Amino acid sequence: MSAVEALRMAQENGIRLGIAGADLILDAEREPAPAVLEAIRHHKEGIVALLVADHDEWSAEDWQAFFDERAGIAEYNGGVSRPEAEARAFRWCITEWMERNPESSLPDRCAWCNKSDLSGTSVVPFGTQSHGHTWLHPECWSDWSRNRRERGQRALAAMGLKAPPKCPEGANLPNDFGKNGGA
Image (cartoon, rainbow, N blue to C red; front, side, top):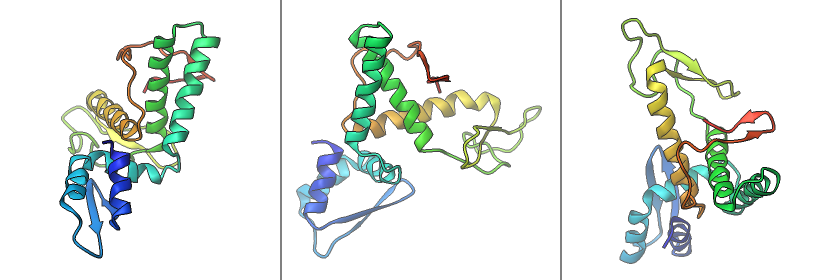
């Protein structure tokens, strides 16, 4: 069972789900069946990712279409093998997820370590989106970025889009309309 199926099962059983940070909020008229609660418990992280993704307005089908389009471009226009094309397409999906799910923070604390200026290192802004910046210590950026990519991968997996078998971390991404896909 996937997170999508668990969410559907909960809704079919009259359970309304919401999120508060990383927590699921359940509301039901009657006590849910133990099997339904177990499915929700088992897929909590994926369900939270799906509910957060609802704000993004892209469905699982939209993400699959984006993946398929990118894989086709890489394979047919880029001349790479299908496995490499799928690896690149998945990385593009993660980058797109990060763009669609921005993370802003207050300028006085690092979004990763939650500390203010360290001795000799200031908290600096990263990003240019209209949502604001994410403030980080330069040395915290790689851990924060890796965590964001992992969260994106989990969110995409919850929608049924899993990393292809060949998805090397260091895959070189082609130039995508002047925007390098690496995050």
